[in-house]
Amino acid sequence: MSPLSLLIETDIFSDVDDVGALAIAHAHADAGNVELLGVGVNTPSRWGVAMADLVNRHYGRPEIPVGAMLPLDDSVADTDYARGTVRAFGIVDPIGAESAPQLLRRVLEAADDASVTVVSLGFFQNLVALLDEEPPGGLPGRDLVRRKVARTVVMGGLFPSGTEFNVAEFPTTAGSFARRWPGRIEFLGWEVGDDVITGTELSRTGAADDPVAEAYRRFSGPGAGRKSWDLMTVDLAVRGAADHYQYSEPGRVEVDDDGATTWHPAPDGPHRYVTRVASADAVAAHLDGLLARTPARRTVKVGA
Image (cartoon, rainbow, N blue to C red; front, side):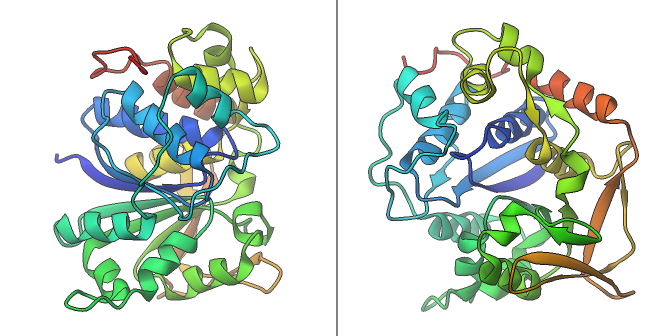
């Protein structure tokens, strides 16, 4: 079977589960399950762009492009792990980074029709900007997505109804995405990953030259893990429901003005959400096993 073509959108500077999610994608790539086409960062922090590049380099794939929400700034999250980690590993400031919507378009234009799985971790500005594009001589963004994207998997919302950060932070944009994004969307809501803790052992025993372990240590402290929403979303994108999840009936997700999501069943609806059918410990053990794998392609020390 051909590897899954994966395009990831992430708000990686703000929470370490985004780092874990990108590590999970690389572990699947090492196993031959995934070809990681690119990473778009949907926050303007330069430290997020640098952190994504650092993880790509750690896994021996420095060629994977990282797109930015421009203009870049120096914003940091309350738990400022990304800035310290990238500085510790000597990653160069991402001056001249490509805009994320431009990267998304470039990657999709080069892909085969109906071949790309898009994973959304964080906010939706880049994806909506892509939809709104009307380039001279090129496909409108909405048509490009319809032609190239086979499936979209989103960490966001709370189901069957409720408020969750990724959606509620920019509700107008999230609502536009839910209404207008073409094709099939699968949602993994807040409730599915809230009690799944990963990275505990990695943060305790991970090598000093492992930036994923270092990020977890800086965010949560040695021996303390983190909730696993984003890791689960990437793994869902790669493996489907497998033995961990169950899909809802088809329907449509509606986002209100305050960012609350509501589920509306509909036989011909383009959306589904997942519930977890495996225990939190079973899912965590699977994900921690992927985090613990030694990068297959790494040949030089990061920052060297």
